[in-house]
Length: 211
Length: 315
Image (tube, rainbow over all chains, first blue to last red; front, side, top):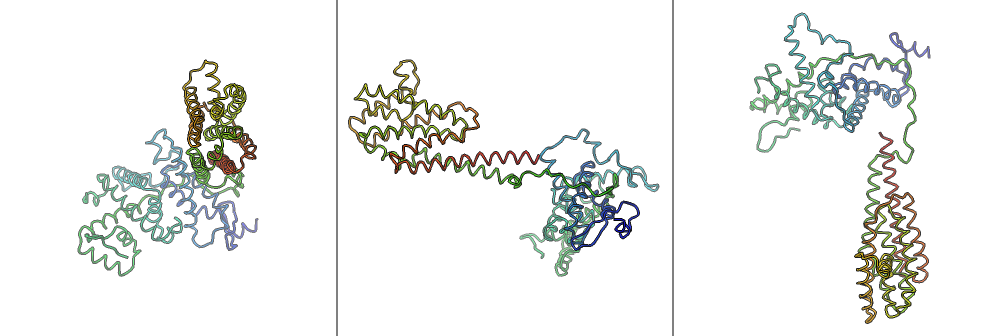
């Protein structure tokens, strides 16, 4: 085990060697470190709930560890995102089957009281408090728009536009054809555009001119 | 793959979206460029789509609430998988239960509407003079009708018990029958349904004034008519009516939850076997029918049970 750890060159965490399908050794914790932010962002935007998102990421990484021998070693991001997407689907289905009423719908989202504040949470020196408030409001509106999309369109928009995947990667992560990615993405974008148009007063000048 | 809608010159949204990402062939892109140059609406659509995408791309990355790095390999999953036969998706069980119930309903309704009647009744009624065999077979039919009508409900067991009582009652009725020789064959036919027989008894005691008693009386009268000029068709009609009475009486019996219900129908089935020695041809098909009904009922209950179990295991 020690030799494996040395071979993996892990310094910041416990080495967790795993074998992929072709027998190559990886450190699973290195994979987690490189993917966790994207995985969390996807889960959070997919589920629109910070505590569920945390569970989803945790669960995804555990099931990814167990299924790592199936990984072909080609596109790690697509592989991880596929697991996260599947976990999110399961959670959404579960939530649909037994809906819960949030105790405080306003404060439950988007701000997680326990999460460490990110740089985006503080106004930068050159940004006025008004601009900061507008920017935050915009992010909230966009998130509401994303949350209003049907599940698969939401996933397509998140993977391609927010996560910056290409169609190929997205089709692998969504487990569907390129054409399906294309149409889901287009419909999702169209819906979002209409949503943002309807909430026009919160949006940059470009949208206000169009309305 | 650029398709323009009929009657419109606007570019399809799918193509605009792919055009934004450069995920479109060069020839199609050239055609879109051309179209965009001509159509202000299309340009506006593209701009709106483009700014939507750019807003999405500029969404701030959310900070991690914690690191998901694992302190060690995660523990093996707990073996809480449901037992092997219950691993299929839920709809398999619910669907099978529905199909079995449907089959059962078809079998029963085919039976109740007399689809099988040509097989059973005319032969049984062939000679009213063969008084012993015919009433017995008819009587059995009555019991069975009562049982099968009740089959989809739980209280088969209780019904079987009442049916047995009915048989007992008919035995006591034999003495009455022998005392009234003129009415004898008619009465025997009336015995067909144990309930009718019971009603007869009640009438003798002149206590109960239930409508069933009245109906039984009517049938006795009709059967007596049949005796005076014995065309077998009329007799069959009367028998069918008596059966109906039995069925009608069986249905409103208050349901009593009894888990041994599916096993109970075997009692009349056994009885049928006994009678089938006397009239093998007429009872052969109906016995097969009863077995099919029983199997369908058991299948429906089994699938229903496994579906409920499967549902619970997923929760």
